[in-house]
Image (cartoon, rainbow over all chains, first blue to last red; front, top):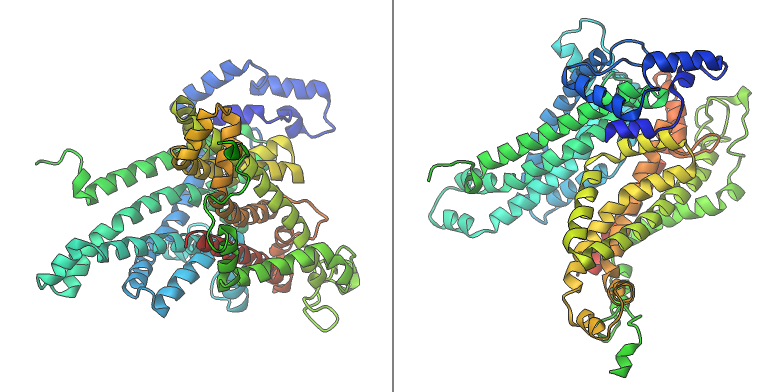
Length: 296
Length: 293
C-alpha cells in the first residue's frame, strides 16, 4: 500500500533530481539506471523481496543505500519517544489518580481542564512557547536537539528534554483522563467497598485493589497513542531539527525521494504493529481474566 | 395513517413544554464553557471577516528599514524580518485557517454522515468491509496521510480541504454508524419499511433527522482537530502558502530566528492558534454537555 502510494505520486523522478533545466535524454537515462521505468509489478516484487533481506533500496537524492539512514533515524526517534514516554506515563497516571482521589474538588478540575487544554494544542504551538520560555528567555535548555558528536548519555538527555515536552503535554491529557476515569470506576465498585469494609487500610485498598483495575484501560490508551506519537514526531523533529524518522519522512516527501519515503513509512508501520502487540501482551499479563494460557 | 405520510422533518420525536432544540439552546445559553468558547471563536471570526479594514498596517506591506523592531507604541506586536506589522498579520491571519478548517469539517461531515448512514443501515457484508477499510485509514496518522497526498497533488487550499476532510470522514462515519444501528431498530423505521419507502428515503428522511445530535457534537469536536491539522500542515509548509499572513506559516518562516531573541515574531501567532483551538474545544465541550444532559 505504501509502495503504491509512492508510485501514484506524480512527479518524474529523474526530473526531480536533475532539476527543470536538464536535458530530456539525461532524465530518461537516469530513470533507466534507477529502474523506475520498469513495470510496476516488477518494481513492487523486487522492493518487497529486498526489504525482507534488509535492503531498503537506494535513495534517489543521496545516491546511497537507504537502510543506514532509516536505522539511524529510527534510533534517534526512539530515544526521543522514550524520554517522552518515561516522563509521561508515570506522571500522567499519577495526575489521573490524584484527580480521581480528589473527584470534583478544585485539584481535580485543575488537572482535568489543564490536561485537556494542552492536549488539544498542536505540538508546534506548545513547542514554540516552550522554546521561548526555556530556550530564549530563561536559557536553561538548548533550542535545537543537535548535541555535539560523541556526547554522553546525560548530554543527550539534556538536549532531548525540550523536544520531548510538547509530546509529553499532548499525551499527559489523554493518559491522565483515562487513569482518572478508570480510578473513579474502580473506586465506585463493589470489590473496593468490600475491601474497605473488611478493614483493610486505605493505602492497601488503593494499591492492591483499585490501581490494578484502574490501569487496564490506561495501558490500551498508551498503546493507541503510538500512532499519534509518530505523527507528532514528524512535527517535533522538524521544529527542533532533530534527525529522526519523522524528519526523514518529511525531507523525503519534500524531495520526492520515494525509496526513502517508502522505507520510512513502512518502518513506522512495523513499529506501530509491534507496539500494539506489546500492549495486548501487557494487557493480558495485568488482567487475570484474560491471562493467556493461564492454568485453572 | 395519512398524517404520518409527511416526512418527519422535525427532529423532535416527542414534544415537551420546550421543544428539544429549545432545551438544548437553553442549556447552551447557561453553559459558561460554551459561552467562553463562543466568545473566543466569534472574536476570531470577526477578525477574519473585517480584520483588514481596522488593522493599523497592511499585513503584507514590508518596510525593511523597520524590520525586526520589538513591540512598541507604533507596532504593538513588533515587526517581522521584512518589517511587516505583526499585530496586523495576526489579526488578518485568522482568515485562511477559518476558511479552510470549517470547509474541511463540512466535507468530512457530509461524506462521513452519508457513509455512516449506509453502513449502519445495511449492516452485513457492506458494513464489515467498509468498517475494516475505515479502521485501516484511522490507524495512519493524519499528518502522514496529508504529507503523502499533498506531495502527490501539490499544495493548494483545495488539496488541504480534501485531505483533511477525507481523513476525518471515517471518524464521523463511525459515530453516525453506531447512532444509526440504534435508530434502525425503532418503530418509526419499521413503519417506513411497511409503507414501502425506499432505502434512501428511510435513511435520509426518516433516520437522519434523529441522528443529528451526535453528528453535531462530532462536527464541533472535528472542527477543533481540523484547525489543529491545518495549522500543523501550514507550519510544515504543506498547507496555506505565502504570502498569506497565516499563523502556522508565519511561525514556520520566523522560528529560525528565535535563537536571536526575536520572540515577538512567533509568540503572538502561537498564542492566536492556541486561543482559537481552545475556544473551539470549549464550544465542542459545551455542545456535548447540552446534548447529553
